[in-house]
Amino acid sequence: MNDIFWNVGYPHYLVLAAILFLIGTVGVLVRRNALIILMSVELMLNAANMTVLIFARMWGDLSGHTFALMVIAVAAAEAAVGLAIVVAVFRGRRNVDVDRLTTLRH
Image (cartoon, rainbow, N blue to C red; front, top):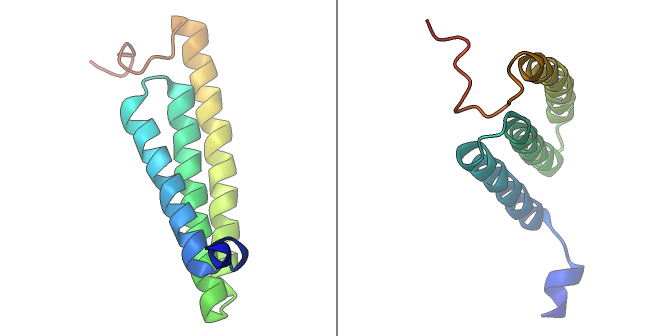
């Protein structure tokens, strides 16, 4: 039993990434607050990055690290733009509940 805690290998990290992705998916599907949804999407992106990095490390390939760095840059831009949109909607509507937002409907 003690070996499980001290010998951490690639499967442990893959399970952690799967759990993080599952938490993010549940957050997107269950919660209605736009900020929580954005945080859940970021959690899902980080879990996917973790998986890419684990497989890149397993195969000894550095291109996975480059891809993960690009995803981190895109995720940072997405977070900045998404937060700006949420702030703009909150200023106009005083609410960020996605069920109540009908701004884009005709």
